[in-house]
Image (cartoon, rainbow over all chains, first blue to last red):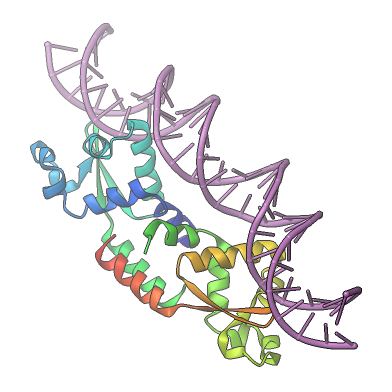
Length: 100
Length: 100
DNA sequence: TTGGCATATCGGGAATTTCCGATATATCTT
DNA sequence: AAGATATATCGGAAATTCCCGATATGCCAA
C-alpha cells in the first residue's frame, strides 16, 4: 500500500468527483440501470459523459485510481465496470490516524 | 479546507517523513532540546539536516504543509518552530470516511 | 468476416512539481 | 553599524502530471 501513490491519485478534482459519484451510482448514473450488471459498478462511458473529459483521459484516471487500490473493476463483455473499494478508504482513514 | 491541496501536500515522501518525525520531536530531534522553545515545535534547520535536502527546499516543503493546514508555525527570534496540527488530521480522517 | 462499439494505450504539448543555488530578509551579537 | 545565523523567497533545469487526439485491442452482431 503505497501512501504517496494513494495521495497522488486523490490530488485531482475530477478523480475526487468520480470517487464521490461512485458512492451512489443509483443517483448519479441513472442511465446505467439499463445495464444488467449494474451491481458490478459503473462503466467507463457513463463516467466519461458525466466528467466531461475525453474517453482516454477518464480511462487513464480510472487506471490511476485502481493502481492506488481505491477502485476495483470487473470486465463483462465489452464493458469495464468500476466501483469503489471501501476497504481501502477504511484503511486510509486509519492510516491517517496512526501512521501519517 | 481544500482537499486537493491537502492531498498534494501529502503526495511527497519527504513531506510525509517530516510529518512523521514531528509526531515525536523528543525522539527524532534530540538536539532540539537545547532550544528553550522546544514545546513550540521543531525549527527548520533541524528538520533540514534530518531530511538531507537543501534549506530552501525544506523551507518550501514546510510552507506547503502549512498552506494545507497540516502544520502550524511559531516565530521566536530568528527561529521558526513547526509542529503538527493534529486537528487537521482528525478532520482529514473523518473527511475520508464521509466525504471522499 | 466485416463493421461497430467500449475501452485501453500511445505520443505529445502545456502546466505543475521537485529540488537546487543564489539572494533577500529578519534577528541576534558584538 | 557590521557580521553571523536562521529562514524565506526567487529563478530555473529536470521530472512529472494533465489532458488531448490518434490508434490499438477486444468483444459483439450481422
